[in-house]
Image (cartoon, rainbow, N blue to C red; front, top):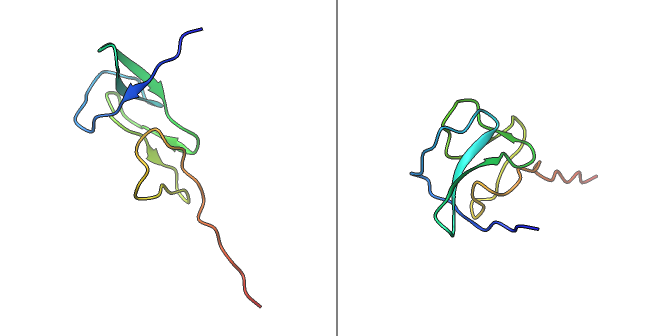
Length: 76
């Protein structure tokens, strides 16, 4: 089994298809990574995936974190 650990760069660019984004592995190889849950890249060569409508990332989370919905508390 192979385990990849990725370094994510905002300025990294590769020709990954929509639905994926580019990353560099520690060994220096370039790979296309599937967008995390509830996110999508819409154009070829994206370096990150944006959250789908209604989903968000915490300010401390980068491209490899899944997008989640904001928790709504209803008080009576």
